[in-house]
Length: 529
Image 1: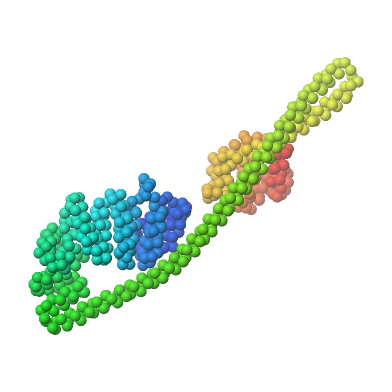
Image 2: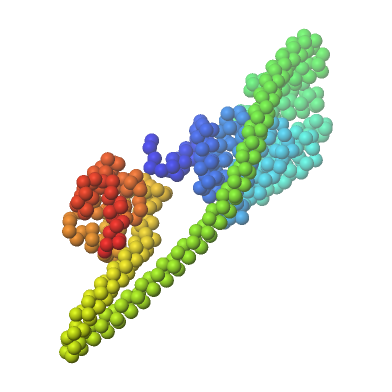
């Protein structure tokens, strides 16, 4: 797919990554998304910057590079403007939610608690009540890893009350699973029984056969433990075997081992002890592999951090260099402006002086002309001298008139260069609009403005010859100081074609069979018109 501009391409990749992330599909590569993030850092709004870095973090998450992902999520948060009226709270709660999940996988409960608390603020700001309550449940699990039972119970009660307040009592009942577990382990069996009965009747998690929904099988182990404590070993074995059927081998073997120890069945004890040991060994091997992966990821994170530190130092040096360049540029601009003002003042003084000399010459010419008329009537001996004086003054008047016209034409050209239409053509040749060619209407505006601003030069260009439209356009561009390459861009032609056009215009205007002297000849017109 081709794109007309870089912003379109960046926006396409951002939308593609967002859609892939929501559909659990493969995201664009981290290289592409890094380019997207860099682009929006320079040109995007706060929400676009957050979104771009969030997508980059999701790409690293899917690549298994948790430290890189967390770094991107932190960067996304740094770009957020939560005080703005259009702040994307939904996106921010997703960022913190992803961070909480990564902290959970990295076994960092304290960091997970922080992330869930931050996510909770934006769930409330966005108005997602159910999401806010579930976020409390996630925070309770993090406190469970820290073995802070009191805090877990406190958070469970808070979430249950919120579910009831907002009309979801069955969701509140589902939260009984953790209190049931605690009651069983503390031998509060009557309370555990009451909670289990309520859980099975009102949670909407059990089908007509009494089987719990997939993913909730841990309840079978808890109920099996309850029957072990009640010394109802057959019932306990029933639930442990249901757990085994559902694929939870470690808890199933551990429960069955406990049952057969109480039954004093030596063969079964030996059997399930070995099976439990093998399952635990398999789990430990998998965890060791994960630890190695985490260590490798941490090494990559340290390498990434070194790169990031180096980039930070480069950025600081770049900022310092930019500051120095800015100061030098400011000084240069002030100096050039001062020189420009001085030269402009001198030029205006020169024009005023020429105007005064011109007016004085006209007065003298008129005076001598009157004297000449009187002499014709009275004294013919002085007639020839006065006629010579009149001719001399006439030449002087014409000379001053020519100088004034030259100065005025030069000033008119300078003023024309500062016009909006010329600025538009400059931007189309070298600036942000470089890929956009001038329209016919814009060419007509340029020529019309030129004829009004510098009428004497425009008349001189078409006085004795007829230039083609392209030749006239090129001559105006050259008078405005455009380079040959820029003129080729604006005229949408090649450098060789520009040379041919210059040759024809120079031949028509100045009768010279070369393209090289056209610019000099055009500038000389200012001194002749």
